[in-house]
Image 1 (cartoon, rainbow, N blue to C red):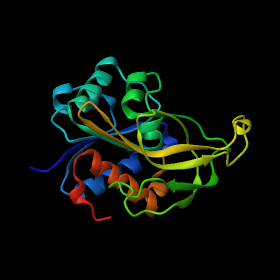
Image 2 (cartoon, one colour):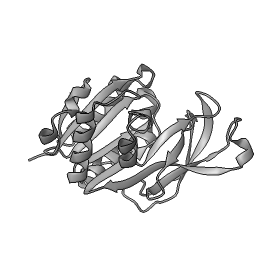
Image 3 (cartoon, one colour):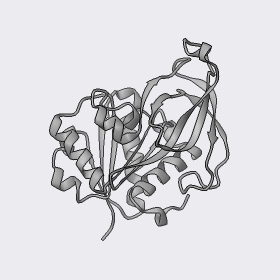
Length: 225
């Protein structure tokens, strides 16, 4: 039986969640996944159903979960269901739910310099499945300043400050951009890269999110990137 994934998209339209979700769904389906895509948070409500999946993919910037939806997600991941996502769709989702943030391992807090700055993504672990063999690369996009859990396994970082802002007097700091962790038995993988569908399709960004999805769902053997 093939792997099963649920992608739930919505929230702030500027991140093009429908288009990004279509990219995720296409890559998973091409690898034999059975994929359900929903534009309703109600899709997270069935706790028993979620526990039968291999992968949850939130693609919902901001928004708010009902108590039973949050509980179902957390219980599913703790039981062994993987969760993976990108940018604001996972790292700036459900801001009022601190347990969700505890599970994901981080939360977006700012992008100094505004919507677009040019910055370097530094690959800090070239041995992990997600970043295996990758080299540092440059992007022009929002540079995500994240508050992160120190227990994360960090795979890539970016250095601030690139642009001005109130953080500048603190001096240079490397902020994690790609990481993995566990929540109970569940694998958690996140990439802060990929502002919209176009950027998510760029080679390095696409490679990262594909491998995040596959690692979280114990499907490393299905990679062709």
